[in-house]
Amino acid sequence: MLKKLNVYCTEKDIMGKTESEDLQADYTTAMISGLQQLYESSQYTDVEIEVENRTFHCHRLVLAAMSPYFDAMFSSGMIESQNHKVNIKNVPSSTFDIILQFIYSGTLALNEENVGDVLQTSVMMQIKCLKERCEEFMISKVDTENCIGTWKLAQGHGCHYLTQKSFRFILHYFTEVCQTEDFRALDVFEVISIISDNDLNVKDEEIVIETVFDWIHADIDNRKQHIKTLFEHLRLPLLQPEYLLEVVEQNPLIQNETECREILDEAKRYHLLPARRQEFISPRLVYRNLGDFEEVVVCIGGSNEREQTRRTVMCCRNNKNWNYLEPLPYDPGVEYATCSYGNAIFASGGSSNLKGMLCYHSNQNMWTRCQSMLLGRRRHSMEAVGDSVYVLGGFDDTNEEEFQTILAIEKFKLSTGEWEDCGYLSTPVRSASSAVDREKIFLFGGVTGENFDTKIVQCFDTRRNTCSVVSQLPVFCRLSSAFGYQRKVVIICPDGKILSFDDGAVEDVGCIPGFERYSFGSVLQGDSVNIYGGIKSSEVFNDVICFNLSSKTASLTGTYMPERLFGFGCAKCVIHKKYLNKPVCK
Image (cartoon, rainbow, N blue to C red; front, side):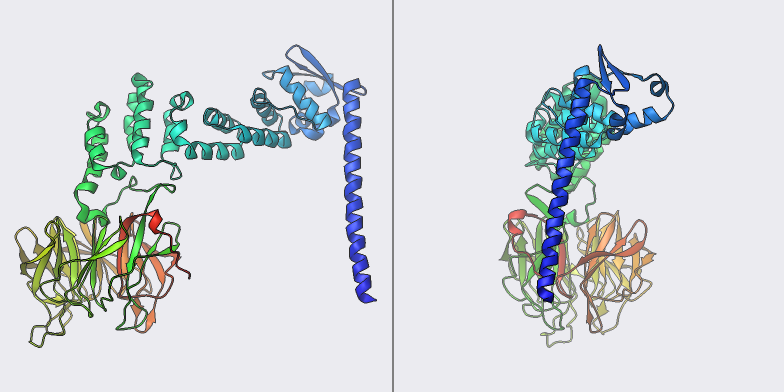
């Protein structure tokens, strides 16, 4: 009986709800029909609305119920509420007629000719449901010829939904929209809002450059003054070098503009110094969300257990998702070194193949084997300078002789693909960090051949092939991490201290509270360094910590590695999105 009763109650509830809905629908139909009859017969009207040369006989109660504009007018004690006559200016009578038809009958006769006026008037009269219907109609009719006008109309009347939708349309069909007369009529700030958006759908940045110059030439006398403002938003580092030098640099508009020349020189440095690309910081080095390429952080090998590693290579994308890339062709073992040159990443040495050298080609998502190093190494440093990759110091535990900590420096010439001896450290060290400043490689701390931690800073001059001790660190810091930043070198110590090194002087920059880890990965991202994973005693981490070098504050990014990891290579590179098709399942 209980089950039947429950079913009966449920059916009754459903039937009751249906009856209520039917009743409401009948009531609405009857009310609308009655209102329409009252309006058409002018029966019981109590206000006259004068629009242009027409007079509309209306009911204040109905107008106030639908429009806060009329409600405020009739309840405010204004003259209109006293003499029962209202004069509305700057509204076509045909438009007001459409609005009254909607108020009294719920019918709406919109077309492409009248929708703009109806939208404008509905905004003025605060008739929300009518405004929404107008927005939906305009969205359904938007095309490459009218999207600019729709966007500007929506902005002018505070129609946020229509503004957003029409702007998204402009971004998506930019290559067609930028050729219209409406685009050429935009003001400079409207152009900037479009070209600076990361969702701009362009195959390459050359299209954006040409569009900007075309816009200026459409009214060159009045617009050439804006070239400096626009140039700040052009992503020149993403241009092909030939286009940058042969088209942009030769444009007469920028010849005498110092600010433009500085931005151009910045892009030229990006292309001319591929060895320093990891340290390049610019608001113009941002890849579009809909473009073919994306800058990612690549994590190579590593492990969550000591004395183990793996061939796995994965990358962290801008959307915080992780993807697998082509794995290493062999397991390098532990304590190998990595560095980048342009969009290539090199990995050398390691316990399983002390002389091994690999190169990752991001444009093909593939690894190739390079000529073996002259000496086998692990726990060494590796840096790119000019057209060469250098390996410095390290450790060879297969060497039965006394000198297992390596003094020799060798370089890999990218032009020939061959290794050659090029000098010696002042003091042989292993597990030191390194960074480059003005063609000089600096090694920070490390462990000496006598198994003592050291505070010394060594400088290897790649032009003279000479090395000298130039400074002392305030702390011992084996297994630290270092990178160039704004003509200085920043050092991340395993205890969380952040140091700055500049021409021999060492300064305390800040500290990451509770850090205490080593064998972590780090990359420079704008004015911050992101630190990935690492190990403390037996605890392995998978978090990503951000230290802002400007504010000197640390925080968790909210991004996590798919697994706990340490002892991996870490570098940025630009890769085609077609290779980002193997997501890592966390």
